[in-house]
Length: 454
Image 1 (tube, rainbow, N blue to C red):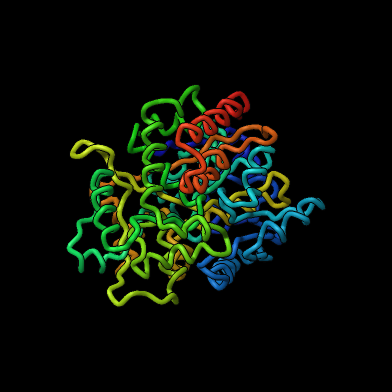
Image 2: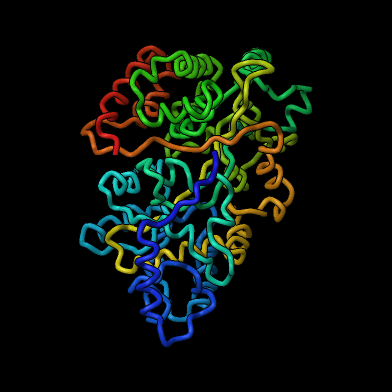
C-alpha cells in the first residue's frame, strides 16, 4: 500500500486565520509550519488538555513521562491524565454527562467497543491535518516520519473516504508464537505452508502435544486477516472488509474457513474452556509448557508472560501465518496497531491534534520504546535490540505486512460482523458449528451491513 499525501480540506482558510491570530507575536519554534492555527490552537493561550489512555502492559509511568516532556515543550499546556485498565467503564458515564476527554488512546476490537460506537455515531474528529503538522520540538512533518501505509487503512480511515480519524500508535507484528527451543531440540522446521502444518501436527500428536491453541477467539482477527490476504491478496481482503456481495461464498474465503475448521482438529482440548478474559493466560501457558506448539498473538505476549513458569528449553519464536501454496504462495503477518483519536465533542480540538503530532517525535518514541511500545515511524527497528528487534524484522524475511479492518457502518440492531466471524470460532473448534454454517452466518451479517456502510 502506498501512503497517500492527505490534505486537510480547509487548509488555506485555516492557515490564514492562524496567521491573523498570531500577528504581532513571535511564534514558538515548535508551532511554526503546523498549518493548523485555529482559534483554539495552543500557541498563545493556556489550555488544560484531558487525555484518556488505556492502561496496558506498557504501564502508567510511560504516560507520566510523556506528559512531563510535553508540558516542558508547551509551557501553556497542562494535561490531566485518566489511565485505567477499565477505561471504558470509567469514561463512559462522564461522556454521557457531556464531559468528553480531548484525546483518547483506545483501540478498536475491544469487547466494550467504545471506539466502534463513536465511529458509527460519527463521533470522531477528522484529524487528517495532523499529517501535515510539524511535530512539536522538531522541524519535520508527521507524514514524513510515518511508515508507509499506516495512515491509509480502514483502521485509521474508517469511512474509506481518504480522511484520517484515528492516528496509528504502537504497532506490533502479530503472528504465530512458539517455543523455538523445543523446535531446535526436536529438529523440527517451522511450517511455511498449511500442508507443512498438518504434517507437523501429526508428529506433535504422536508426542502428546497439540499443534495449536489460542488465547481467546478475538485473537483470530489478525490471524484470519492474514489468511484472507494469503488466500486472495490485498484486493480480496478489502472486498471482505467492505462487505462485497457474495464475498464469503468465494473460493478464497471458503478455504480460509475450511482451514480453521481443520485446525480445530489439532487444537488443544482445554482451549475453549479457557478462552475468556479471565483464563486466557492458561492457554498461553500451554506454549511455555510444551503442551501446544503455536498460538496467534502479538509481540506484547513476551512481557505479558514474563513472570510465568516455563520449560527448561523455552525460547520465544514468532513466525508468519502459513501460505496456502508451496513455492508461489505468499505468507503474511498482520500488523496490529492501537489508535489515538479526538472526540468530535472535545473542548480543545486543536490542542489535541498538536499533542497527537508530538506522539511521533523522537523524544516521545524513545519514551514509548523504553516501555516496550513501538511507534510506526522511520528508524525504530535500528533502536531495538535482541528479541524485540527479531520480531519486528519479520518483514525482512519474505513475509508481507497485512493491515486493515472492517469498514464502519451505521448500527444494525443485533448484527456484528466481528461476532459472526470471530465469535463463532469457539463453536467451530468444539465441533458445534460446521464451516458451512459459519460461512452462512458471516455472509448473512455482511449482507445486512453492506447497505449501511458509511
